[in-house]
Image (cartoon, rainbow, N blue to C red; front, side, top):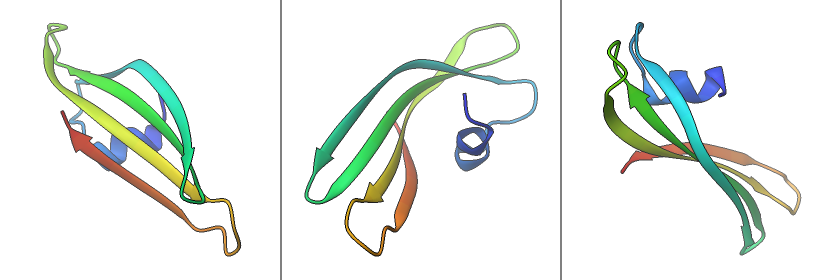
Length: 71
């Protein structure tokens, strides 16, 4: 689990961000890594699920975008 992803989503201290799966896709000149997470509270109960997208252009200038959405 990336600390960068934890900060992006805003997971509070005491909660865990558990990586559940990932996939990769290429289309429209972008290479995108997609990670799925569950947010767990102190008791281990799932509170929410998230999709985090880390996308980079394969053409110059190679800019990148990091975003998430709650599922």
